[in-house]
Length: 229
Length: 245
Image 1 (cartoon, rainbow over the protein chains, first blue to last red):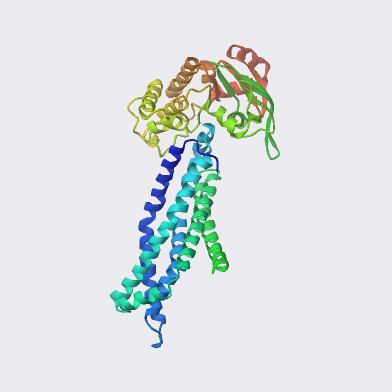
Image 2: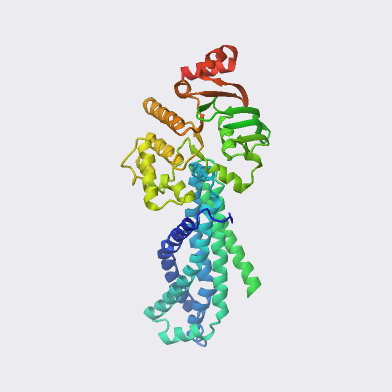
C-alpha cells in the first residue's frame, strides 16, 4: 500500500475527493450529535448537582472537560465508524466482488495504494478537524441548554469552562482523534478489500468494519487514557 | 507470444491446473475452451497475475511473469488489456472517464489528447455519444464494448477476454466476437479468449486449447478440431454438449 502512487496528480485528486466525502460529508451528523450531547450533558449534570454548596459553574467545567476528553473524540468517532466505516467498506467490497479491483491490478495499478491510502490519509486529516468542530459545538450546545433553560448564567458557564482548562486536554483529545481516524479508515478498507462472494458478503464486511472499528476505538480509548493521563 | 510451461496451481488440496504447457500466438485469437470448473478462469488469472501458480513459467515474449519483481510485473501488465466477464467498469466513473482511466494513470497525454483518444476508442467499438453516461445507464452489449475500448486505450500487446459473450443475446454475441477479431488482427495483438461458446470457436478461433479437469487435453487450429474430436472423447463430449446447450 505504501508504494509511490502511479500518478501523484491522480493521488491528490483522489485525496481531496475523499477529504470532501469524509469531512464535509460527515459534518451534519457530527454537528447534530455534538450539539445534543453538549446540551444533554449540561441538563444531566445540573440534575445531579443537588447540593447548594457546589457552584453552578462546575457544570461548565464538567461539560467542557468531558467534551474534550471523551465525548468529542470518542462519540464522534463511534458515529463516524458507522457512517464513514460502512461507506468505505461497502464501496471497496462492491468493487472487489464486481472485479473492479481485479481490473485495477491487471492494469498494473497498486490497488490498495490507489483505493485505501487516500481514504486513510483523508481520514487522518479530516476526522481530527471534525473533532474540533464537535468539541466547539458540544460546548456551545451545553452553553445554550444552560442559558435557555435557566440552569446557569452565561458568566457561570464560561468561568467554569475556563477555570480548569489545560492545554494538554485538547492535545490528548487530538491524539485520540488521530488514532481513531486511523482505526476507522484502515479497518474498513481492510474489510472491504478482502470481501469475497456477493452482495450478502459486502453487507457482512460493512457490519464487521463497524463492529471491529467500534471495539478497537473503545479499547484504544482506555489504553490512551491509561498511558497519557 | 505467450507461453505456459509446466504450470501448476492448486487451492488447498485441490489441483486446479496440472502441468499445463500451452502457446498463445501473436496476432491470433487463442481460445481456451472447456467445461465450467475445468480450470479455464484460473489459468487466465494466472496469466494476468491475479493468481500465482506454485510452479512453472509464464512467458510474455520471453519475460517470465513469475520471476519478475512487483515493479517489473506492473510494467508488463501495462501491456495487457482485459475484458472481464462482468465488464468491471468503474461504476463511479462515466464511460468517458472509464476509458480515459488508463491514459490518466500511465500516459503523459494532455486532457485534449486524452479526449481524442477516448473518442477514437469509442468510435472503434462502434459507440458514440455515450461519453457522459454511467455504466448503469447502458446495455450489457454496450458495457462489453466500453470494456474493449478501455482495454485498447493504451497500446497493448496482449488482450484477455474472459467469457466475452456471457449474458449477451446471440446477435450481440456475434457482434462482440467480430469486434474482438477485428481488433486482434488490426493491432496484431496476442488475444486470449476464455469461452465455452462453440460458435465463437468456429467463428473467430485461430488457435484452440482444450482444458479438461485441470489438464490440457488438446491444442491446435480450428481446422484440426474436427479430427481431434473423433480421437479425444472428452473433447467430443464437450463440443456435443455445447451444441446441445
